[in-house]
Length: 447
Image 1 (cartoon, rainbow, N blue to C red):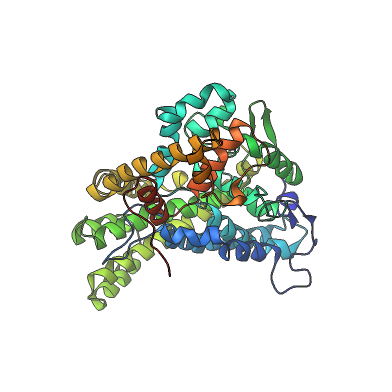
Image 2: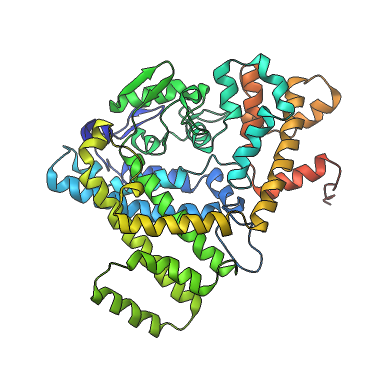
């Protein structure tokens, strides 16, 4: 792969708008991508979607929106670091695009979770469960094997790519009409569901041709046509690293604020990343911790130091392995290739997170609720879409916004209509609609 093709101002649905990174505007092409995403309603809905813990009450912890903004911040740093390296090595002929790699990575970070359904990662599992083991299993005979896997392996990554690229009814061609570069930066798993060895894949059957077009525009190698799979765009590694760094470290801070992890445990987890730091660095940290008496601020200071350290280390891993990344032969993530001392500290964080955070009672409770709520909504809406002449079905279908209705009437597209609608809901809206459909609560009468 060649940076001169990988960094492009070409946009899905619009072609090459301007060869220059800035054109006649004060914003670069990649900055326009960032703005297009951050001002969208789909992005705003992330504020009412669960990250890990239930949506905050007295103590404010991360939701999908705050997590995403932090990931974008780290992603910008990683992108800027890459740009500096490429400038020194004169890898690209278009400097204005190169100087805005940070904006492209940031845009990808903003978009990376936009396809995730309500109720955290359990929402993805709940949708897959409905088709694999729930009432949706009855629809299997009406779908191809590949179409069936799109639903039984439902993945938020593929759904984000669909959300950004699909021309929903009444919307423009190309969806968000982002640059190919920003779009490619979110495709962590560049293959279809039939090529997946785990639950993860990068695009649904309905977006296969879109990914192929994008890959062709940037000359990203296609490894296999059937099943379709290809190489990652190099910027994917930066978006992935920003996400990995933020969620694993920020979840520890949230757990501390909620009282799930004690101060000593949290401090020890974060200080483990500095065991081999220089004496002067440790002395500086000790001085700051003595000056700052508030425990929350102390933990925030240590957390910030860890994120900074991991960001620098991931940048260094990318620099050392740029050749393999461009060849498509690099294995694993950037975070899995950091120095062993940092890997050991991260392994402890992961073990504690699994044992004490992700299996905490409040987390498990919201996961169970997600299964029940999303399963019920899917049953009602897929049932109505499959039997639209039924009087009750006609009423239920009136609840689906017109933008989600498909132009064709295949079973695959009918199911997608339901999944598009439900996966875009916030936790609060999904719960409210569930209660009303079940007759648990009634709509307010507005005068």
